Amino acid sequence: MNPKHSFRKNILPALLALALATLLGVGQFLYRRPAPEIAPPQTPSPSCELNRTPCRVPLAGGGEARVEFMPRPIPLLAPFTVQIHLKNRTADQARLEFIGGSMDMGFNQTKLRQETPGVFNGRATLPVCSVGAMRWQAVFTLIKREDARETQESFTLPFVTGGTP
Image (cartoon, rainbow, N blue to C red; front, side, top):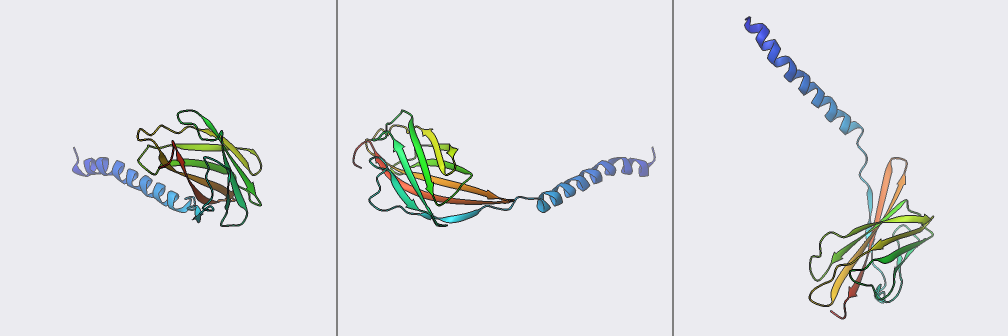
């Protein structure tokens, strides 16, 4: 067998694979989706207690969000309703993540569906904490898409379940 023919036979597939990988890499670079703009998190008024009342949060880009959990007090190990009303603000999508403040309670995220413009609803369930009272952070993220750009704005509401921590 001719050594030149053997070399060409082995190198040709490697060169084709390298060319394909380069084209895919360049394509990903040129057509990548821009990173979302993330606004700084907002803080509600100190009197806000989601386990007892609805909460109002001013949003960084203007407007406000009114958040409500129903029923109150928030049940444990049972579904409850989450509702966000946006005032003077729009969003295409909203999601909620619960983070245990007293201990790690695992991943707990809910996508809220838009019922009417500016009103998002969903159902969530919180696990039971074996040590009694539990501090939580409810992290809400509002997502707005315009053209090829995505903007995310988050706000966090603390609350307590199961008594006084």
